Image 1: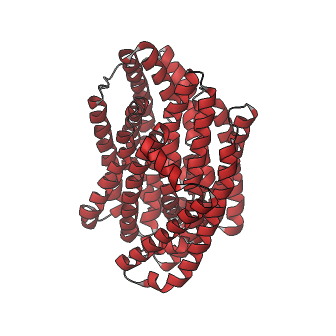
Image 2: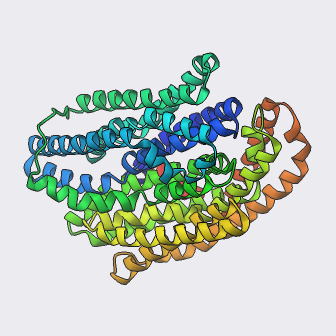
Image 3: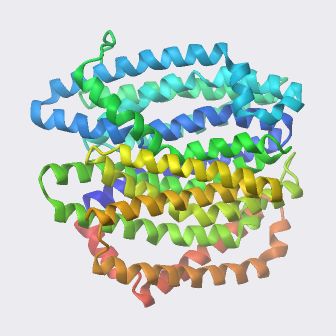
Length: 513
């Protein structure tokens, strides 16, 4: 119950962040649409988005949390704080060098990250300019990640989960007050991203101070603990951030088709909601839980936690995936189709979203399976599988792009996600670290059945309500909200009658929590 309660804390806060993210993206769509400035900004925004997901949303935890928790339990708070300070100093030194290198060689990097922009010199100039402004965000989000990992190890999950809220609030303020006055809205948004990094860092610094874990800056030294962190952290960060790596590769290929970067970006923003609320939330809280159980030699408890985490994740993720696959057009039309975002953009973005939806359960399962490796200080196996996943993504995305254009990029990302999931799950099963228990075997097929019933209801409702989606913005939002709410009610009824989830069990769980 502590696991589910902590996941609810992270998931609820992440849900607020994603809602604010939708508000932000609706304003961005209206302000810059899917034109050259939009493509240039989204390439620049991919840098902070990628690093935020890799560092702030759990991947950095994969190496840091087990080592910090071990220090905290074995040697006390002072020793754990010293290790955190050493890790922060080493990380900051490396990132300063990386940032300086990137700022100087950004034109060359843009040839790699946006090869298609070479045919449009102005778009390439904007992408370089915007990226130089947004890249320093990496420094602050990385320091924020260390602070969030410390708080997660102490069982305090709210502050770290709330940090992305600061990004969205800062950009919304920029969209309200700065973009209308700016000659180049993409540049104004880029400065909003950079400032958001500073705001997030200050928020976590205050939270750590309140928790009695204020960090002092030390001279960087390669101590044995830092070496151990690097040994575990490099493969852990790469493996944990494989989803963002694949999306970045997709962005690189998408620059070869006008508008494709923006279409994939907006589709990505939609499916990130269930991924963040469910997958990332469970991954963040599952790692400390499994680490504690394994240190206590509680293998049965670790198996039980992993089974319940998977059951809970699929109970929420499968219906979300079905909904995104069934009514993507309605969702994109209501959220984004206004201003410079046209009906043709809605059609293209909804197609990408439907394809991404097929891979959503795999993205979430990756977040559930990975902590089972990281808690055992095994980061090389996920890294190896991540490498295979990247190879699958690059080859399938590029091949499919030649035949069907940008939808092939979304399909390649989805194929890569399922490839990674099957590798992780199979390896855990073969080593006896994950065996589906009777409850999971019974309830998972029922979850699929209930989700199918909900999908049918959503399709019928979408057809009946189609004219209402052409009403003014607020009315169409209420119609979409009503359709989704009706789908949730249908899903709850199917879950109750099939036994996928019992209301009485949920009530008992809440009372225990």
